[in-house]
Image (cartoon, rainbow, N blue to C red):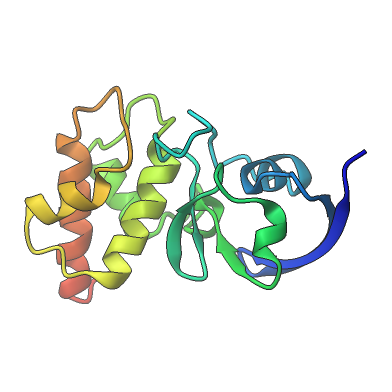
Length: 161
């Protein structure tokens, strides 16, 4: 018999109060409890980055966090960035630069890049590559992803996005 605990967490601007099992992973809470399936689960070991979300503004692997750890926190998932009809600047840059193929890694890449764009100037491709080094992609070869983040960083500096 597993123990449960009440949590209150704000996800994408909406506050949820739920009773959750103490062992429930944040990734499973987001996907199965809240129905936010944009967060992908790949390796379940924190290696691939597909499950990356922002927790109180910092990128974190949702497969390594328990939902109970997020009590009182603010979580942002890929669903918070934009919508099909209204992409945000980073999503638009990914589209324009063909920075996705199968799309499995894309939510984690977008959330990691969102964190990077909020905190760093990203003045060089080396900085962008370093920031994305914890996210694995088997399809793109990273060139287009780096180009997309570079474009988003340049647009941000110009005040366009």
